[in-house]
Each structure stands twice: as structure tokens, then as C-alpha cells.
Image (cartoon, rainbow, N blue to C red; front, top):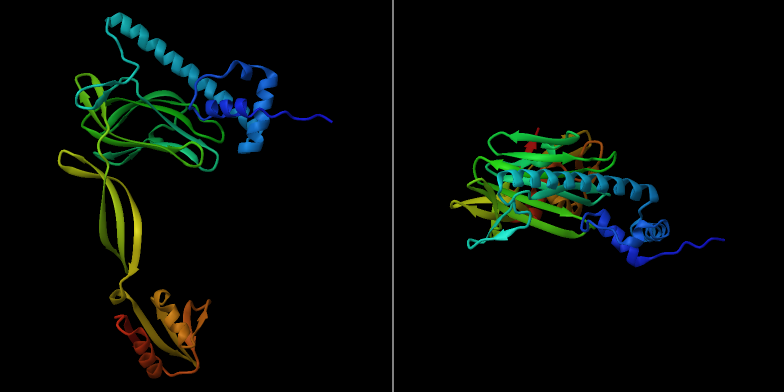
Length: 316
């Protein structure tokens, strides 16, 4: 009986390579035995089948080949113009990162791993929608920017590289994703132009609490934003609390055969209705009782609601 040997160190190295956090493979992973041990580890630790590993390896190889081509082209252009194209971020005195060729990776991997790029100013843009064509393309997003992207999507997953090559006004973008089903990275930038360079500044992300009325509810939201030219640009929001507004609830009482029916906004007062001995009719989507007449039910319901200013209407 054969025994499958597991190598955790090689398995984690292969895992980092597959999810894009490493661009090189250890020499041992270039051998059949080393790769087999790593795949056994990935099966047990992360649930990856050999076919899935082979698929991602192929996609990563294509990405790295395309990246090498891009670097080669930029090197030739740089030599011709006798200027140095920086490939590594440089920090200036204003805390801005000047970098050409900053590439954002858009990807999906499994059920909960993803990478996304979105703009929130001057308008909302999901870059996924603009990068669906297979291959390498340059496209213009009207009024926002020009991008260059490479789409190497597989049958199951998204694998795309996106680079902003020109802008028409300052942008606020958010690069966000999960690489291992837990929070991995989140980068927020104000993108500006300095001469012919695209400049990425990491602004302070602030949080404020806002209370809004949404239909029958008063909702407390935690909103995150950055400031651009004195304006607040919101990048996301989280619901902290949701409270019903009783004054906006309306229920109707109606006599139907031997039943008194209570319909309308009953969800938030269902405990009160149960306490009065009422029953839920799933077909009619309403509560009913046969033990009281309309006026008696109305009086008891008003007493039960107390200071809750629910509107009660009797339909004849």
C-alpha cells in the first residue's frame, strides 16, 4: 500500500505562489516528487484538487509571462527616451507614492477569495465590468481614466491585471480583497497626476456615525470616507443599528366570516398579537382571531401597544 507523503513547508510555499503573494517557486517544487508532496498538503489543508492546482499554475504562468513582456517593453522605451522608468515606489516629501506601472490584481479563487478595484470619485466605477475581454487591451472609462489591462480568466476564476495609465481629474479608488477567506488587504488611494506621472497618495480614512430614516426604520450607519478638496468621499458603510419607527407602522382590522383579520405592518408587533391569542395565517399573510369582535380587539391592541403610536384602521 502506497503512502502519500506530506510536506507542509513545500505546501505553504506552493500556496503562496498560487495566491500571488510569491512570484518564485523553490527548486524542490520544480521536481515531480516535491510538487506531489505539496499537492497532497494543499488537498488536506485547503481542499485543492490536483486539477485545480494545475489550472491555477497555468494561469499564474501566463500572468508572469505577460508581466515579463510588459517589463521588457518598458525597458526598451526607457532606453530609447533615455529616461529611467521607476519600477519601485518612491516616497516624496508630501507622502505621495510616485510609481509607473502600478498593477492591481483582480481575481476570484474559491468561494470567498477575491480581489477588486473600485473608484468612488468622480463617479462610482467597478473595474471588473471594464476588463472582461480576454487578452491585453487599453480602454477609456469616460470622464474617469484610461486603463491598460490583461485578462487571463480561466473557466472558473477571474485573473486580471489592471493599470491606470491616465486620468482626467483626481480619483478616489479602493483596492480590496481576501486571499485566504480572512481579511488580507485594503488600500485606499487618491490618484493624481504630476506632470506625466501617476501619483498615489494614501489618505487618512475617517469614520462617522450617521442616523438615517429608511422607510419604516431609523438606521444608524458607520460610514467611512476620505477628504478630497474639502469634500467627503464615502467608500463604504456598515449598519450598526436598525430600529422601527412606530409612527410609520399601519395595521388594518377587518371582519372576514367568523374571523377578525389583522394585516399590514404586523411583523414588528407580532409578539403583541401572539400575546392576545392571535394566530398567523400563512396563506392570507395575516393574523386572525375568532375569540373577539373588531372593537374589542382594537381596544386590547391599543392597550397592548402602549406608547407605540401604531396607526390602527378598521375596515368595514
